[in-house]
Image 1 (cartoon, rainbow, N blue to C red):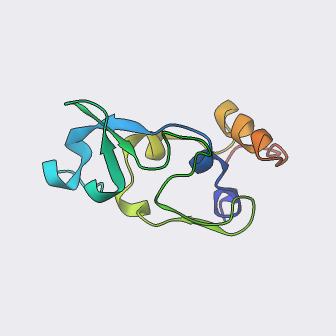
Image 2 (cartoon, rainbow, N blue to C red; image 1 turned 90 degrees about the horizontal axis):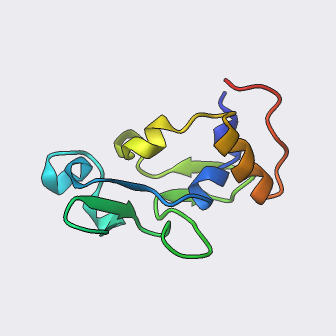
Image 3 (tube, helix red, strand yellow; image 1 turned 180 degrees about the horizontal axis):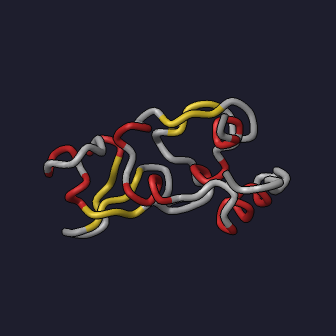
Length: 104
């Protein structure tokens, strides 16, 4: 089982910008209702553009049981984020969570 399911620090740490073509209204899969327009080409997940950061699709409590409400339809930055990466360790540290022993 992925340690992401008991973490969620990345979803409460980073701005999530992506192409508008990933939106369901533009032929993609990301629910447009959970996003804000940045400019004519870029959308952003709601909640990731102000402090405290918390993606609108995040369900649960960071560091405990966590999940993504749109996991199957999440945008490319979320799909590309790697468990155990340097960014993962930074996000975990900012939330007072220990670094992972090894990446999966």
